[in-house]
Image (cartoon, rainbow, N blue to C red; front, top):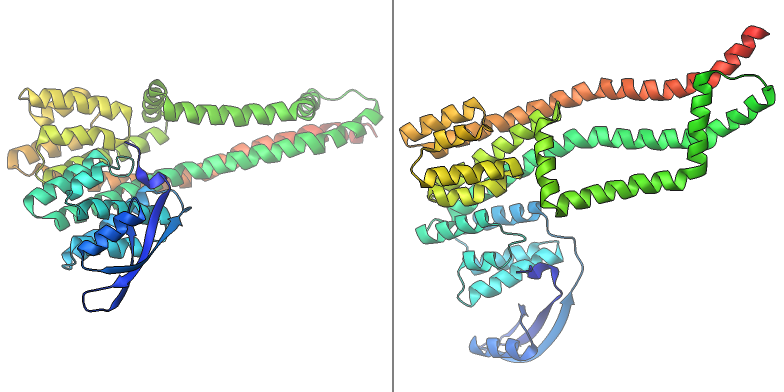
Length: 403
């Protein structure tokens, strides 16, 4: 089902009098003015005015928005605020109109008798199976605020890992993009000026100079094709990665095997996997059912396939540790901690410790990578720019020797 949060919604502002004759005002989401009036009359309010107001625009809803909402809702429920009132407070205070509309939709569903987990399931784009399953478990056990707190912690840690991975990748990519732009400017505007000077010499030019000038000619003549090909290639690559299942699997496998970066991606994926399963166990979700959500939450196709295999093995009576070991994707430390957890009956605690360890490992690896990448990038850029400069000054040095 498509998420209503992306569809234009209408909110009705109303004004009326309550049973005591006091003027009251508010907002309500509904299909029409008649529905608003009927709902208010059932509440004992004499309606004077109903006005439709469109709430358009707003930024798209991100995982960070959902994490903040989960933390706010958990805090309010712990403070004893009723669920509907908590939704009303969070929705009114949200700066993103789309998020506010989404919360109003969910509140309206809950107000009509729908369970909170069922209301969340209507919006799978924002609330995945893991989220809905934990909320459902919290409702059934009467510990909704506790599980929302665990969910918020889980989402915050997941966001932190993603941010660390992005910070590790953005720096080298940004530097390489700037380097390409600088080299393009040199090739298109600077080298042709040198070429005019060298043509007036009428002397034979060194091979490196001829090579740089040939590359410059290609840039000058086909700059539109070069930029178009690179831009189109990058766009096509990311679209294929996003839409093609085969491409996603191939890229996920390649990411895990990349030098330097692969280790960080692997540790981050293990941290997400163990954190997710730990959270599900702590909520009392059965193992086989919990594994339905764990694979997708890992964010890597290799671990999704491994989780499916683990689920099949566990459902036939195999232990979790032996099932994980047979996949060959989990480090020995995770397997050992899982084995200890199975023996002691505290799998959720041991997996949580493993997640903490690998999250710290990712943090340290990202810091080390940043330190390592700086000199490598400096050497590459220095060699590239320096090579171009030397190539263009070789003929001048040659003329100086002749004179």
